[in-house]
Amino acid sequence: MTGSLACRLVAEAFGTFVLVFAGSSAIVVDHQTDGALGQVGVALVWGLTVLALVYAIGDASGCHLNPAVTLGFSADGRFPPAEVAPYAASQCLGAILGSLGIGLVFPDAVGLTVTAPSGGLAQSFAMEVFLTLYLMFVILRVSSGSKERGAMAGVAVGGVIAANALCGGPVSGASMNPARSLGPALVSGRFDTLWIYLVAPCLGALVAVLVHRFIQAPPSNPPRGHSEDRS
Image (cartoon, rainbow, N blue to C red):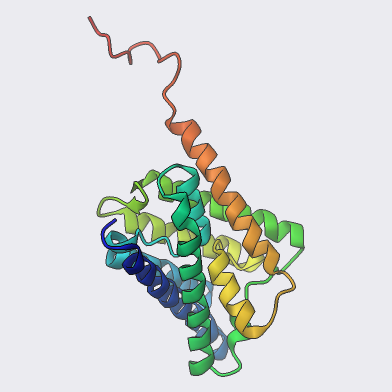
């Protein structure tokens, strides 16, 4: 990553602001137009916004936009532990500003953007763990250091966001992001199930690190025909 820590924090705050404002706007517009966007449309807005941001600020800050992702990179040894808290704080600030922006454009509609379980608490917790595990695993596999690599990294990450929103949205809201859930909760004053969206994504990200490390670990006994010694 290039630039000072201050510049990277601004990039993370701005990127998270854009993500929360754009994604939340889609939710509100879909509600106010009696489902004109639909679940697919809302999911695409989240995914396409992440895709665009990866290309826009990936080189500046790594485009984490998510405290769970930053935690996962740090647990995998790719990100300085001392910078996890500043990154998470900037992401939460961006999410709060995004939710405040929703309140300005759509008065009294912030409550629509709060992530909340549609069913049982345990079901939503498990869904958030799985969705974030999947997301973090893909990010780890398509990234170099703590930023995405290659022209298609943004497509992969944005695609996972959209897919997760489609399959998990009706169950848990498909947050996968503590900052994304914290912003609307603070602005609307609804905290009853916020703990799910603070804990489950972080747990999922840490499990993803374990899966990633297991897959990339060199086998102790390489299969016959794959040895480097071919003399």
